[in-house]
Image (cartoon, rainbow, N blue to C red; front, side):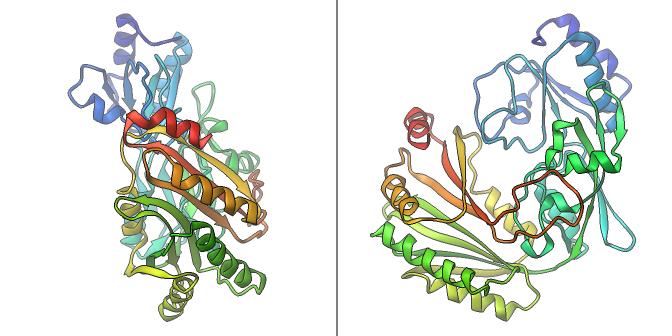
Length: 387
């Protein structure tokens, strides 16, 4: 049921009066900024509640259950299909549950269920630590970026607390942790995770662009270089590659790759970056020694809020000739231009360190087809192109 009546709002305010939770209504001065998400969706959001504790989250869920009120849950607001907000639904905004407590031995950390990946990377980075990122802690599912040598984000979860469907705070048993590792928010709203952390200070981050007038040939040459190294089992686990296709004003459609090196041996990292710069006719290569937190900040700055449309994904075992032909034919035709395509690769099929329900461990590429653009005037054409 939509949360529309003034009486229900009064009940909600009464229930939360003794807490530090904040309620934002459409007439609040900063409501639009608080409610904004990555994907714009023309829905009525009657209110946004920002709890500060797990008890606050439980109170809000209990209120919604008693009053049969619809609600959604958010932290970063990056749901690529625009499901962060529902028409007439209360939004439980988890971003104020963002505490980080690092263990004395610096092998684990307990983090709030609404913390954003950038916040977590900065806090851990101050202690010279990292973790493979779970993109949204309340879902405990996505990983970004992948640090292959440290396994997947789901494999870092040691413990969890969540608010279940009855509005009760629950500490996950070992059996439930198996479901949370990959199933995430399907059991409830994650309010706290205990995760593994690892020592790592500086990393290398590089952006490489290739001459792309013959886009199909450029992608093919890069892919042959990659597949040769993969077949020879020469690619190190410290190396992360994210190929991209972008329409750049006054230049055209360009193929490139974002390279990240997580190893301690920086000279080896520079050598691998040079190797991939030669995987085509390189027209630009920009490399810097930086931190994971800075890389995440820079990549977040590439995202326009709000965007219109959505992202589509498709997983494949490898880029076949046919796949490359389709990409080369359709990417230059993307209405509205901008960032068009990338693919994220899981190279390792390591067995999980702990039991989980996350099954996508076979080596594969996840193709990200970007049908989200900053100009609403092209959104219908871009969605048709993407689908």
